Image 1: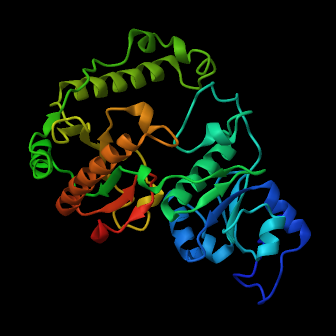
Image 2: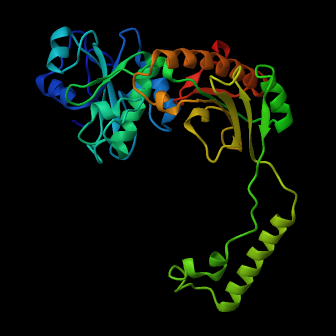
Image 3: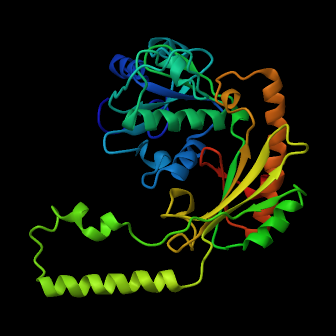
Length: 351
């Protein structure tokens, strides 16, 4: 795909500008995100910004997704151009994934997956940058009620109802008993899950120094300096071990009704690193808390199927209503930023 911005009849291109045959051939050979004509580039750009730290699709017409990949668009096609670009009806607004082709082994016989990769790539599943980019645009298609036309001809139309879970990122930590009270408003049977893991310090192998012997063979520190450094490290470890136990992660779990539809888990932990979803917040650079509201599905096989059974879809709808209710309660308690199962922003006032 050519470097620099491509123009359809949007952005800065003059009205009536057509795509040339080379551009149409490039669109045919790349994976395409297809969106309804009512979806503007600002909405698409907003979804990308929730998942990608840098770039502005609406401003630049492209956004980097990795070292060798990017999303380019929009391209607004007329009917003839859509046919030449291999875009099926009724789609006319597309975004192109520009990424190296990277494939691993074919899917196992009978394998099914919610994103339709086993169906669309029977000769080898995409991975690395191509795989990450495809997962992103399939998630965007799910949110926008769009589709993905993979390079060639296969069409992936993800089910928008499949995204059930939410996450709330907040600067406020709720202690376990408080969160249990919050969740119990919707799930009266909610219980704490606080089983921790005992830690007694580094393993004897690490203390021996063997794992690092090669790396420190030419260490510039003298033997006495190394001994002092080890003493300081040991003192720090002993001080931590002697302190009071602390809770930095826990969960609250409650059954949905009689349990036939599974349960809801609210998993709480401190974010390991800044995330694109919160970069606009004043508290993004400090420690903040993630509250994951997840459906503990009783049938994981059906949940991963591209087209689940009707009775499972009905159970999923019921579970989704309960997950939404619990998410509302959590947001009322901690405020913060809400994202859906795919990591895209959700307006807390429209939950």
